Length: 482
Length: 140
Image (cartoon, each protein chain N blue to C red):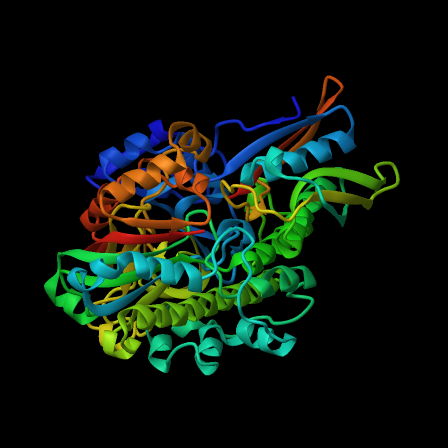
């Protein structure tokens, strides 16, 4: 399928809808030539699969970090007409509202380095991590329903944050009209998810203490409160077992729906339902509950991170300046309005490993940032650079206001564990002065820096295509993993 | 061979499980799934958790079995190693039902990754030359 790609310019490639049978629309890949060279043919084929679904809007998009996954490739966007199209549990994936949060500080490396190991150990103790990790919160049914309904606001109302945190969060930390009870939310999802509120998880999720090493756009960085040499904290995690179970429940329900509505699927994973059907709206409401769970999850952990810094640095977190820069989601389905052929159109935009990147002036951007554009937080692979970007008008015109989400894997997990040993990865990072704590060292092998694409090349592509622009880069000093 | 991990799919993990009966392939698929997360040999069996599953097809039964095992793994905090069935109603459906036991221990082995869920991508249960083959891709 890759051989059918037509290069449009240095960072754009087009796959016409004639590339295969039943494609309703074309597909676009954002990426430099180097990106395309390593893009798997199977990932391109997966784009064409999504392009066959009812009501799909042109184009189906792959970002430069795209790679072979299931259903929609990881690092891709599929948008559907809100009236005529479908909504797909399969396109959104399991880790609903997996996302990234960035917290700034008033600290520099000079302040933190003498206490780095102590800080990492403190955070490792305060933030539960690892497979099946259980949280410290014990919630009643009513409290849990409240988490699902109001997301991060529940955490703030219960002493885990401040109101300003909500403003600096995509969707203000909650999506309205989320489901909270059966039949939309199953007992399985509640049982699996409730104990995991306030946990980091495992795999590629992490908490990092980082140093801003470069500023590319001084004015925007100033608006975001970022400067060279500043210590920031990046948190990457999602909706844990709750979201994973909501996804599982609706994969099964939508498998029934595709038969009921006679929807042809080239790939069983792309199960979906007409967006306006009861099944489609049930999923959307349940998905929003998982979104809210994840926002609350990251907010609760923010509070513990602040407490950890207070304990080690000996000052209140407010004096330390631990304010939230922003919180973005990169696995979600949103109902958004976008311009199509000069008209406003409501679309269900599925971002799977892709981040919203709204441009300047958009009303959904918090007021302090509105004139410059939405902060976009890009986590690099473990031990490499991360980035802060800003959303652009071009993204609004071209990619449904979307950009990449990370470095993107370059190697399968099995290949990574064959090539790397967790202990060696840890030693190599520590030789560079980084402090690493993880529940398991084997997991570090899968997450070895070289198992991922070069994040700088990914960022070059989104910046070059102008769908989001470089503002700052950060390097990790301390890494905490499950 | 009970199961293997073909080196495909960059972001997630595929496995293929084999068996001469449906019960055997279901057991080996369960072992393969947990083998993605840890070495089963590191687990000492000390307890057992009852797991049920149902499906309109045998394929859906397999999907429900694997998905419900993930729930019990996370909720009960037991690292599963072996599996058996009390009832396996492959002739009586649809719908098809099973009740089984998932056996394992609570001491955490060295973990490799985390399985979030069972996808439908390339999900298949086939019978080839008197052998059942289950192909599953899990989200990690």
